[in-house]
Image 1 (cartoon, rainbow, N blue to C red):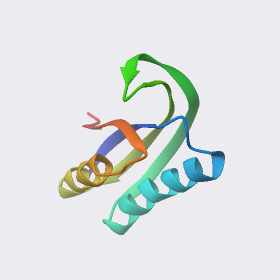
Image 2 (image 1 turned 135 degrees about the vertical axis):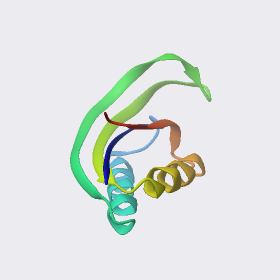
Image 3 (image 1 turned 135 degrees about the horizontal axis):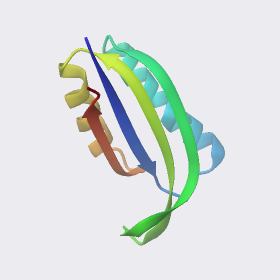
Length: 94
């Protein structure tokens, strides 16, 4: 198993309950895929460097996790089709 981290930017139009649900959904995807969530760091609402989908702000959170190499591809696929996620990146931690 290898270490990974995922940075996710959510739409700023979400309320606090929807943001918590999105964070729990990402954690659930990792845990159901056989991975272990090491840390979740919620950065809160921040200004974007450039406009994305007519949004100037986004809600950021970072998830550090340990998983098999197949799980990050599945996580990337599920984040890509999520309506609330405006940007994300999953990288392997060396």
